[in-house]
Image 1 (cartoon, helix red, strand yellow):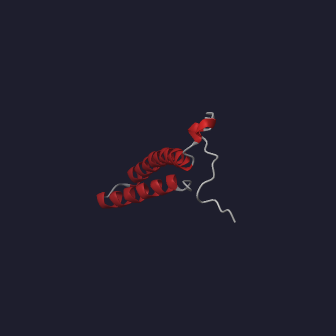
Image 2 (cartoon, rainbow, N blue to C red):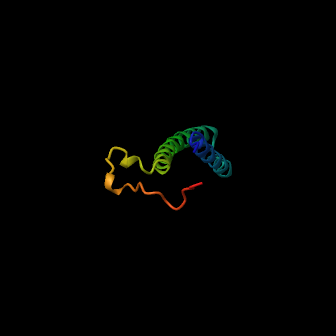
Image 3 (cartoon, one colour):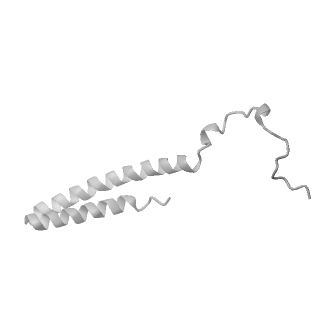
Length: 89
């Protein structure tokens, strides 16, 4: 899964919400800019954390047997007999 745009999307949604609330509340320009900058910075960092968590989660989902790579297989459990699906033509 491509998780690269997740921090930007989260940051922009938070910025849009901040802009709408600031306009409704009639913030002054200085207060608006300071608030918007802090919100964008905080939500960008939260988006980066979310991206890292999703990357780790999808990596585990894509390779579920990665924890068993180094373990040795028991040769007695491997079945070498032909199955019913084999074609004998």
